[in-house]
Length: 228
Image (cartoon, rainbow, N blue to C red; front, side):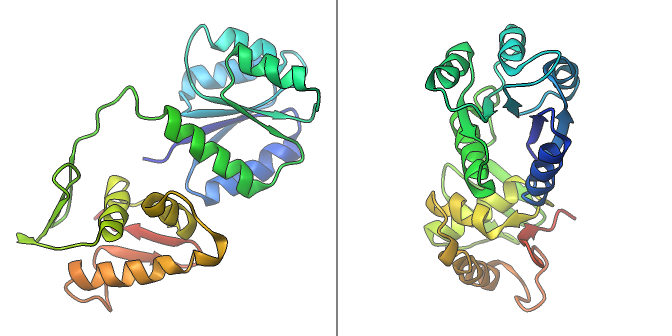
């Protein structure tokens, strides 16, 4: 299931820019224009992460954190144009998890979001070690894979790649996301290397690798696991 990100900023252009980018990266995005509106949206949408501007009318970012931290521990990344170190420290002391200074690079923002989600996500839920999609059974604890009842030998990276896809069937992953999942970091010049891993994985799990049943190419983005 896609992670939900709440963008809170009084500038519509910023909200739209960030929303469009994160939506392309597979996130579900909701928005608010100030802290008061953000409280309402957060209570109803239950976001996995909040991107929060500091300087806003009606209720600023600091007031939002003070109010919302009494209700939830949702991770918060501050979007701040203020360069004073005390402003950033105050936000962190109130309960923010990280900050990004405006103007920010979208790739850096995405990396910060993923890093915070890795640190804070999944602590309240227990994931099953066994994933099943169609005729594929993957056991994350035993590191085994069965396809149509037959045990399949995968390399560690092929296993992690398949596990990532199976954990969110139907979701389109970018090559960058998949590289980060299998090696912890993605280098832009290496993004195309994921094609090789996908090709090798298809050769092992698909009946006809040239016409894959499971791992589908999402042109212009990356790959997804067929959820049908």
